Length: 261
Image (tube, rainbow, N blue to C red; front, side, top):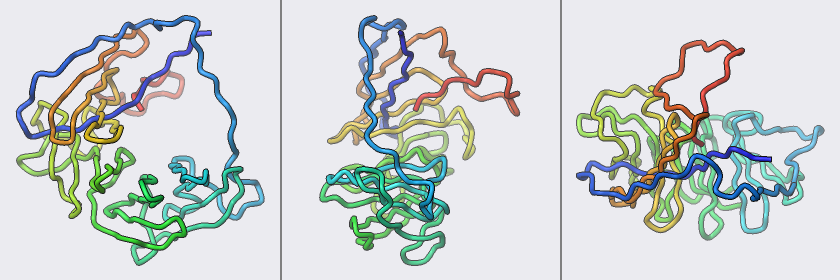
């Protein structure tokens, strides 16, 4: 049985001049017809009798002991902690904008030293695994397309409405929550907050390497954290046709466009 998979990596954009990068065209058909992906069930998070339950768009982070941190759960400002076997251990936080509260959790990530990074609307909070707050700072985070770098800065997909950054989709935010570096698009046309042609998936693979990919195109770009464009991977597949914007109110009977995640 053949499976069609969309690989997801991510990249950053830079206001520096674009440099020549390697372009790799990936064959549209699988290179190994006999290969397969084996999926092993590890845990089911939660029980029907639990007082909280992950929301459908919740993110998951795993610590070195195998415990799962899931958020948002039940409310947009609450996290649930599960054991490696899926049992609910405790909850962290609640909805709000005060200490220990979160207004719209967007992304979770465990970094070295087992610190939990919570990205919520407008804020980046660092917690111990017991839920104690280590640090909090402002951040231009309003979507789930974000990740934390090893040095504590963030890579985000965000429309920044300033003359020097308008139309650029990817940004590395400094500790003050403002863009240090922007890159990922040659266009300087105005882009609204939710213009689909400007949406990117972003990912971090450690060190100085980040990846960026447009949702409506089978293309991945590798960048370094100084804004240098290193490589582009392109795959031409008949079932993944490029699109910039989806049709408004697309009928449920129509097959939705594929997206890169």
